[in-house]
Amino acid sequence: MSDDEIDLFRNQLRALHRRMRREQPSMDGLSTTAYEVLIAIDVAEEPRQPSQLGEELQMTSPNVAAALRSLEGLGLIIRRKDAHDRRKAYIEISDKGRGVIGDARQGWRAWLRDAIEHHLTDAERELLFKSGHLMQRLADDPTTARTTNDAYARSASGSNVSGKS
Image 1 (cartoon, rainbow, N blue to C red):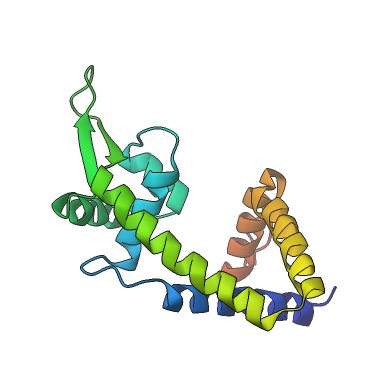
Image 2 (cartoon, rainbow, N blue to C red):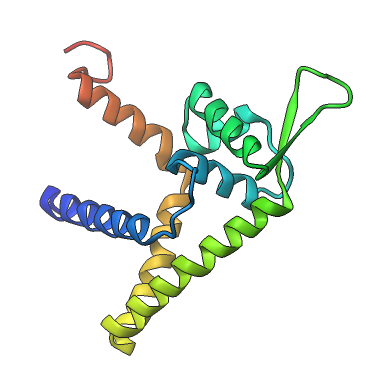
């Protein structure tokens, strides 16, 4: 496949992502970063440390800390100290946070369902959902993550594998 095809596909994914963000229900007082952190906390199977959230979301510690302060101030999360090491904190979603996320999910699900039902044929819907499974496989593939990121960083910096230009 050509670079043009890859670029087109990436741009199409980004366009859909931007549209979905625009259609996301307004969350008064909540930044996009805080919203993303809240979602990550909600889907986690157990309470998370701030550093774990940063790694999962590829965010810096200051950005995660600011988002957590905002979320805690709004009563959307609960911060608990580790019983054995008081320096460690674990973050979990509050009932109020679950309600906010539930309302937001209903809003964007309604928009996406409506868009799919009104703009795609049955065959296109089937193809879209099959494509979603393929995209998830690509997203979950651990064998390409580090190599691809390293190759990208080298090409962006103008260096080759040996570090020499």
